[in-house]
Image 1: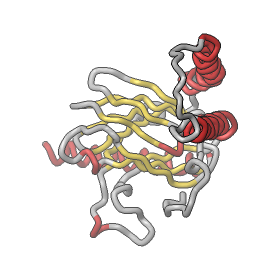
Image 2: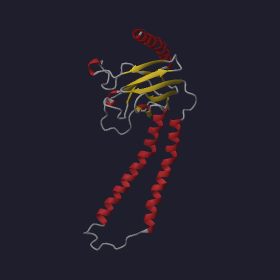
Image 3: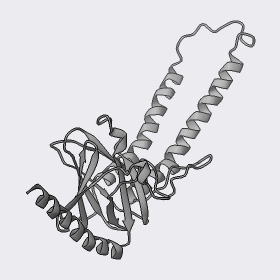
Length: 252
């Protein structure tokens, strides 16, 4: 994923999931045109009023206070605009809420102060923590304040379900490239699904003010091919299982 800033961007940031692609399509093909038309129309209306009804061109002001046809028009047109926006908006909200089909991968996400814990309950039920990598430990090419020591790996073109909760306070699981922004609430499990459309590494952050280090708990997700995912899964099951056994042995 290219994290460098674009000069004079005309579109939204990269879309890397089916949900985000629909969001971008809704923005580019309907919302942007509608907003642009409204802005141009209001600007032309303001310029016309400034020229036509200024004190020099209109020295004797009109005395009427109401115009029923105009009042009906400026009430009905905004209602129609909202109706035009409502139908695709509700369709998009429903699509983002309900995954088409049963999820093939389930990942439980738990927000802590101030790191993320990830578990794969359907793949051996192993889990690991993801903490921010300090600036001095960053390798070349790793983005500052976004890189974590461990990270989530998911397969491309696969329905992945994230079960999101919080362990202490309210956090937010925010992944812009996937079109995901869901709260991690203690005592509650919120579900969201992702179907990544391209391979790569994508980043997000907790965007809630969850404490003094709320800006230092990034989210790092790597999307790989299904073959690479299975290989990573076998390695992760052993790696994190051994790490858990080592922690238990150290406590004893």
